[in-house]
Length: 368
Image 1 (cartoon, rainbow, N blue to C red):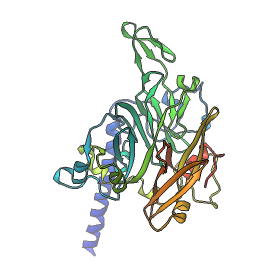
Image 2 (image 1 turned 90 degrees about the vertical axis):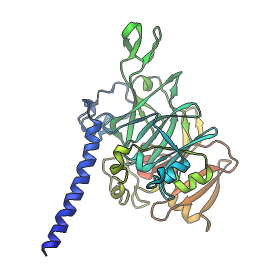
Image 3 (image 1 turned 30 degrees about the horizontal axis):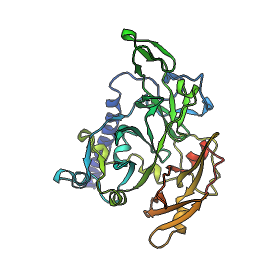
Image 4 (image 1 turned 90 degrees about the horizontal axis):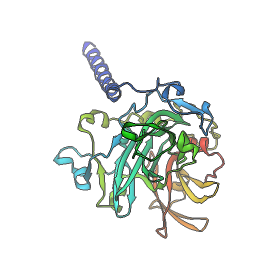
């Protein structure tokens, strides 16, 4: 019996030590004083005079601004390095989910094991500045061109949530002397400095507060795939892979959202919510853009469980959406994912997302 108590005590010690280390990672990212008390959106210092959504829908994420380390122009591995990670333990294995982004003839894979701990990556691909955003609470993966009106934005993590997906903000921009951007104030040596950052929704792909919202600015979306590594590298054997920070290996080896993704309980409120008797809130979906009308983009949502049920024995399913031929390849047993593309190889914008998060922001979009 005494040995059993020793085992229990050891288990508590190890679990507590791991939890303490994860808390340390967050505190390390807070090494400097940051805006935001974790709860009251007004403490984060953003401009709400131009807010395009109901302020009541903004929620503090329990983190301050940039409470997680945003990655700026991170290092990369090639596919062979990522799979064999310098001859030691493997960095990615076949079933690991990655967010894959392709621009021109270049591709990068961003493993979820890394994105869980950073959520935002400012990067470049094929000479184009991009931002990759992953919101674990909303199951949302998105990527955009960071250029807006001739300026390249650098994004941070605002610390605020809108219907459970994190909001980005563009960090203060110093412009060349004699130019103006947004609502500037005087800077050093005649330069101008953006006095108010803008908040951006990666689900909506647009600014929702600040100078960019006042000018109705949007981000040019890039296609992403949220699929197992084996599927991504099979299509793109020359892909590059986001490198890991060896100082955070203990964190990367754990999934802080495995329990959350394994049930249908929401961590934060969302409004409106869909009928849970029709499908679970966290049903994994893919939103596909069908057009970019003058009044905004139009989207159709595909329930991946329904797609899997319709797929053939190889996991393949095809459909036609407004004259556009779509092809899905379904993966996974416990947590379904899918590759979606146009059968005619034309451009396609899609966003993996949980059903409740998309519905809360765009309740009128049809789901198939």
